[in-house]
Image 1: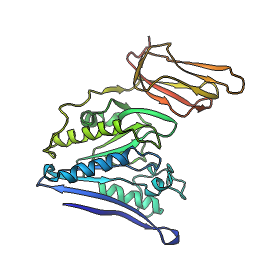
Image 2: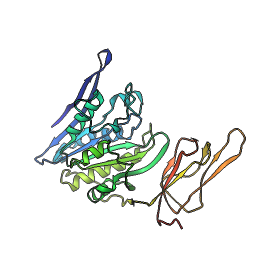
Image 3: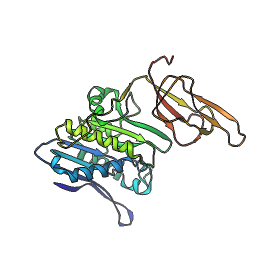
Image 4: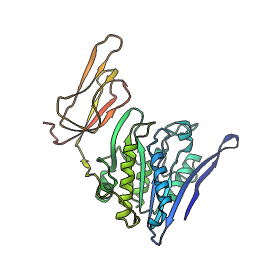
Amino acid sequence: MIKQEQVYSGELPVGEKLLIKKNVLQNGTSSKRVCIVTGTHGDELEGQYVAFKLNQIIKEHLDFLDGTVEIYPALNPLGIDSITRGIPNFDIDMNRIFPGSMSGSMTEVAARYIVDDLSGADVVIDIHSSNIFLREVPQVRINVNLSATLVPLAKFLNMDFIWVHEAATVLEATLAHSLNIIGTKTLVVEMGVGMRINHDMCNNLIDGIFYMLKDLGMWKGPTVESVRDPVVSVGEEVSFINAEKSGVFITESQVNTMVKKGDRVGQIVSSLTGDVLQDVLAPVDGLMFTLRAYPIVYEGSLLARIHRFNKEGE
């Protein structure tokens, strides 16, 4: 069975509607259910490719599926249509209003419908890209309080990196936090850079999703024989590099590379005077999993994140 279902519909000005839909792919007798969610931010497009390919592959080989896969390609369809990170006209980041409220604004009501619709799934995979400013290694971000449950699941997804973070990655008002606290296991995937699609990164995630489905007993078709063994970063193992000067960040460094303490990551320069304002040096030995993509920076701008392999940085 393949069918589209409406998750939420709300009236907009000039006779238009906010319409959130999902595609339901179901076969076999298993009651297991996995949900793929994306499009919360309109400038994050990696998930659009993943949703397309998953729909295409499962539709062509529905007999391999035993259970239900639900694909939500656009939780913020207005944002995707307008290439806007938040919800246009409301000036709201959708991933800061969950779990929503049936007595709130239209966007809060939509958030409530989304949480209720996803509730009870065996696994939810919430796919994000980075913003336009940063390039990210394909990674899963997990709140430290949920690491014992979610890290084993995250290792199926064929990602390069798992960041077990104490707070900022899974804020209280995000979809992932709202679902995890009611017992619906939710993994947050982040990769690439905003407003772009990296096919290789997406295809690796797709391989990982089918690998997970096979482990859950939901997919009887071929999968990759093995998935990546990700670096798992916990607690204080991440070092941040921030700009000390405002200017243009020039770098030939690449994300997902090893650096040593003192290596030059890049330079902040003045296009007016031709001066180098700051040599940006790696403060520790480790894996650079985040790197600035947008070159204009201001004092305090995040330039890079490095997973360090020794806490002292020696």
